[in-house]
Length: 538
Image (cartoon, rainbow, N blue to C red; front, side, top):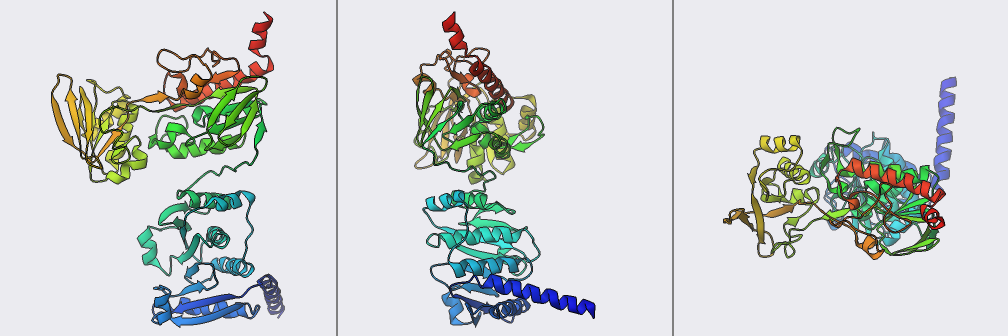
């Protein structure tokens, strides 16, 4: 008897709590429920019962029910039952499934969001949504037994309610809609798609979800955007590759205020490397994954400003670094600007760039599955990318101007094991095609010429150091065009330092990271006791 009284009391408290929550619904939320008598009939009944129960506690939720064969279903493009349509303008939200189990929480959050016409967002999230300028059709796969699904579904709700002009939302229960899940390859939950592109595998934070939705690419690291017009710091690091990110960590740990400014993609060349196999601690890791780990670590110490280009540096005490968005006052500048892909300079390369000519197999390789491509180069990068292309089903021919590869032995053995076709002592003379790559012209060392059929050309022949800013500052360069520096990474201009690929030497992730650490420690010591002041005193 005591147990029954206790159960009744618990139920009464739960009902009172639910009634209090639903009292927050200010506007009417019209629901359209589409049902049928097929295999999902029990779920249709469950949806019906849940809505009826909730309507006991709020008059703001209304319900109209239609059979899937009704003209209203065709008008609304409803093809599965049960489907709930939230018929409140201007919102475009539907639910393919029953709001039961873990998803009952999501359903209540959705009713509250629509009933209030607003959701709570962080300032960073508001900025992301404010900048959204094109439509996003969200599709989120969930399951009633998944405790992580409500978090991801609520992220979608926040986007659809905050920007109804651009964002629509469909929540799909994979248990009740296995065919739809199979069509998207959603074999686990939660999974989120925007415009049919996977943007979230597993639950994400609000900011990460919205950032992924905005960029139409799953993001693993969220970097808050700053509105500050001017920032005072000790060290401005120009470049967000391994050298720059490591320098940011070491500088801040030494007691310096540091910032990292990167005009392009964080991680530099590493971000587009298919697989990294020689970074200590990782037998094998995707380049983008390694970058995400580095960026997450660096964010624990230093501010990062992606998408900003340094346009000018004014010497003085302090120096003034002007970017495309703001200005920094600083005591020192570290140039970790890296290097970019070197071009062949042959006819057709520029004209067909993006139309079959590529410098990134990770980015563009999947477009060439089942097709023939030519890989130009014979170093580590060329062979790594050739193997990556072969492994995803691309027919690869390597063209190398020398008599032997310049790559690591295990890469050469893998190329041999894969039986990739190779032309040594051969240069690419032209890239041919009308509107897209169709073939390449080759020339051997003895002057013979021939043509290879190809749908794509991937070029990996080294890098061009990004020394534009260094030249503008009057920094002395080596005869090879890299920044000239001393053993402490000091350049010829006092207060300006360098690290990473822009210095030349071994183009390895681990060496770039090491140089970033060395430079940061040297800068700390110099700022404590400036060498340029000591030289003046002498």
